[in-house]
Image (cartoon, one colour):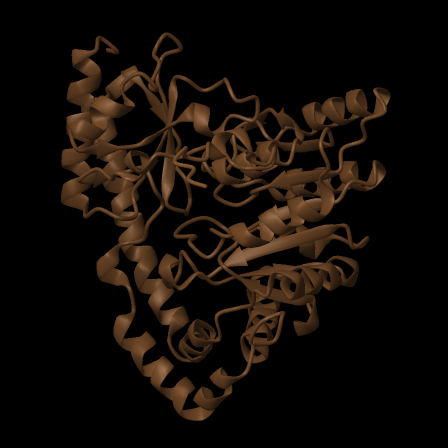
Length: 401
């Protein structure tokens, strides 16, 4: 029997399926301020090649085996050492799970903890991919107001108390406390302690997303929230994407055995694992050259941040405000409230400039029309200046200033 009618998959999709994304949405501008890419010229290709050669020579035949479900043990040992050295965290390698960047771990935690209708706390504007995953899971997302010091404790407690009064105790607090994405601020030590105290009082776990912390080029280091925790309620994710290369897809999660045991089961059921080939290279390179590479990388990123800020001052002047982050890869642009930056995103891209409008990062899915995240990692300083000038000309033509 012939049946030439095409199946309409849109009618049978799972309710948990993500929204459709057209390939056109993946277009990049010549001046790419949209995505937090590092400088391609700074990638440590020679060092990675040498590290991979050493790793394959020593352990290459082990690639014939399926890898440890938690990831390459020597790299987990390095992560444990690095977190102790840099973040004052005492973590056993068995508490570490490797995976594809930090997003995979965030997604897994959401799958493990969040049911449809569960309340989740985030910053008022935060990482768009995490928000998307939470929405797909049916989470009831509540954003907490922030200032340059991070989440406001009084607003956090008010939001939680209101939810508890409705018998909707939040399942999770998700925060990016260092070089917050997209707002760029770093949460102060006092705010971190306040957040931990509030979360402990209401018995709410925290997921600390610290994937940008290694990109500090000025200011004082602030301890990880995890390092301040005495209750075991803080889970932690980090990444090598921003310090080595996003294309290697390697990040790490730190959490309690109750959660890690379920990570193992997720890997077993899905047949997934950690890329041992990449792990060999990252481990050898981390042991030999990563610290020196990061030092050089920070000089590049600081110069590009300064160039973007200086050009904004020259071209936007008092018509806009922007953050001055102490690290990371982006700043947060604020236009007058009457401006809707969603309206000109496509025109900007056609003119060669990519940026992400603030609504992408809004916990309430509607605020932030007059905001944009501008990344300064990928383009050269000269290109950054030109791109900001193009953006300024477009905004001026639109009557934004």
